[in-house]
Image (cartoon, rainbow, N blue to C red; front, side, top):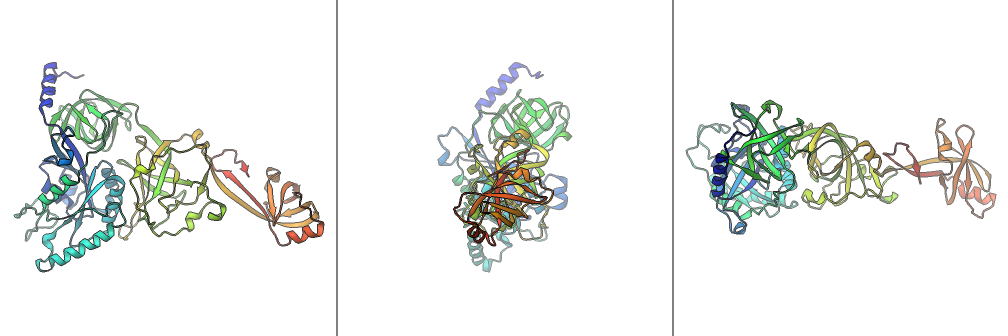
Length: 570
């Protein structure tokens, strides 16, 4: 129970009413390891959170970012945001790890951002994780600024030429993305100090950072009013958790939807518990309420800090925990491999990553466009598609349960094609409806110069066994046998269509084709042979024999893969 005197609450509310209204914009800082992301965040920020600038002891020991870092700075409202009801603009920087093994942390962090800064080391150019970060940015951010860092390490005599050459190469790499017009800002976030280790962030540079004003100007020019709403259920993405003696447990994170207020009851669905919000802070300043897009720290009681490192807090009952779901999917064109049905992959939803497998399917094609089992994708070229992948908002069309869908052996490489998947998780996760899912192969060799992100999707709905059986996903089946003999002008005896153990009675009445003659299976004939009744054809016995000479008996049908009765349909 909250024992704070009513007069204190009134004073806090009045104090909050006097505060300027701040628009918070979350900016993801992404890039390859050692490109200078944390140095850039440090150079820009005036406010640090409990998780900023590599405070993780392992980060300090290894000299690289191992977890998400959060810091912020205030800026003057740009002209395009005046009149929107805000007094100030706050940029919250989400410093994402650059090491290949930590890409799942980057994926989780990127799903809370409004804008992206892609940091590129000018001495090295675009590297493998730079490309992966670019893919993540395309799925999660509307605006991107390219920061070309470490300009001070380029020899002055050739600096201008090298800069121009680097910019041309980057512009070419961006040409097939939605960020083709992204601005580039040249900086030295932490000018080199003679004798200082490159990874030693604790040693202050004697030279001030270069290019920060230009970068802030570009950020202000590019920022747009995020689409946010205070109504609807709360979805709070938790990224850190720690105890405060005598107060309770503080969970820090970002409000992805809805709002949260002091004294509000929130649910931790992964723990299956509900707790009341005791107090809240935004970068160490007390607040009474926070809305979508805000980064806050929330204090609750009776929650062990060791119980929840990352996860979700939400309006009670608004989140679903699932392990089987229908997902609308699209391929990531930079992925050179094949996303095969039933093959294992890593699936990241928010801050959760689990092993999963998928069954892919799409709208039916003519048999000529796909083989009997609908596996045209397995033979398709892995050549990148020409289309620019759009934001994952293009995956929100409602799934039509009344339609039939064709099973695929693999995800087809065309991002313009409507495709879906039934995704089965090794361990259940909790997410909001319509959540963004990113599939990857994190077990691939990180030393190989290849993108590990395979496809992305939007959660349509979770499935139970009954709902799964209602999905009309079918496989095309084709069998071929031989004519054993012609019994008369209306009857054939066939063989080789079924194995000796097959119950031929299951196929009685199904249509077959023998050259240009059509017929149907009438009955079994002996152990593995069968009788075919031909349809009216107007031919005599000799003409029938000539018409079927050397022609196979073809049986084509389809079977719904989720039908428990395994019925065959023509």
